[in-house]
Image (tube, rainbow, N blue to C red):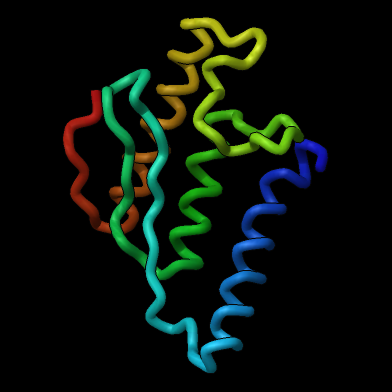
Length: 120
């Protein structure tokens, strides 16, 4: 999987799994919900979590937030929490990642009318 395909691989796999489960149990995915949770321990000592939303919307939110973090390197670890250990990651680069992530998180919260806690 190259870096471009990386962001589409997980969503497509999730959509496929949701369709399979819905078919297996003969149910509709209407009303299925989810939320996005991303590690932010390095910056604020906890995870960022979005409000509960329809699962497709939660997936889109995940894509927005993960793209801010620069996770996708084409490796099988795309989207995992170890990005600070990447070659070339410096405290300054990590600070820039946080500024992008924080801005996007606050924008998402404003868009969905959610209330988020204080984000340093």
